[in-house]
Length: 103
Image (cartoon, rainbow, N blue to C red; front, side, top):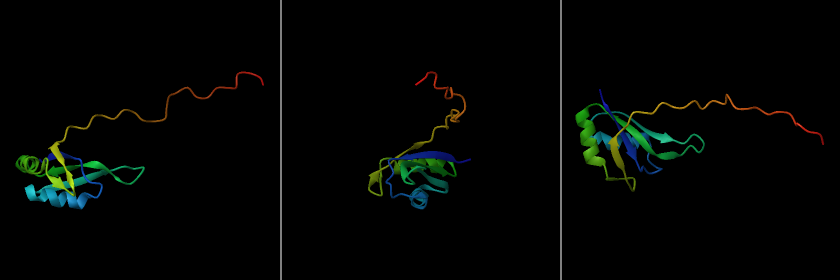
């Protein structure tokens, strides 16, 4: 089972393919994904890389944390588990009410 790594401070020019290419220098990359803002279509400046082994993940952290990629010093660490998302639905809430008065 691989280790998922958080990669922060990415250049807005970094894409999935270039991120994978960089981390391939540390071992076998199972996946590399730059997180994109849905509203703007631009990178949010961070992403995730999944390495195929714990050893490759440790090598990637020691090799790339603080190194310059696309003109920015990236931060690399073990990814933390994703927190459960709160319900973001549009349910609940009070609704509109009448005008309540005369005019």
